[in-house]
Image (cartoon, rainbow, N blue to C red; front, side, top):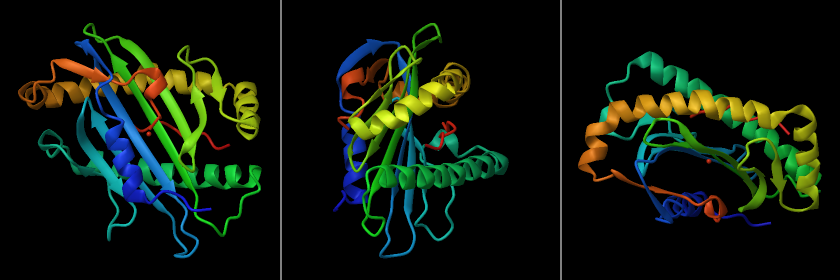
Length: 231
């Protein structure tokens, strides 16, 4: 099975930031994660990028000589080494969890591990003018197609296809949605507020008082740092 090249996947992610709705005063924190297995090379590729509204502010690429989470916005360059060490450790954990999840999915589908496959994940939250959460989202895909998505109530899951239903039932039995909801309502919102404070001057200069957000249906026609549950 041939999967989309990593560069193409990143372009798809960038395209997902296109305007769909405009909500005055609404801001978003989004993380996009990609794991691509590369059995021919003997090592996987893991990349993640973080967006505050439509501005990329952090990234991680496992293919670099010294993989670390790096700043992508001027207002993030003032963070100290402890912050970057912590975020890098979290990114490494996410790559390991993503690898474990992809292995389970490939096995559930009886697909060959000798072929390249991809695991994609979108995680994020939106807050309104009052600083309260408008919505949160956790969306997963396999080989570029929808797999399982946290519903808008953040209490249940929607699975695409018969095989994905196995994961949905398992997660509902384990209360996985509750853990994601707790993360989105607290950690995600708290960091969104902190990043907005750090980058507010840049964001205002960029004219982002009118916020662009994705509609729920377009979140993946299209992944900070939440704990990725293993399937």
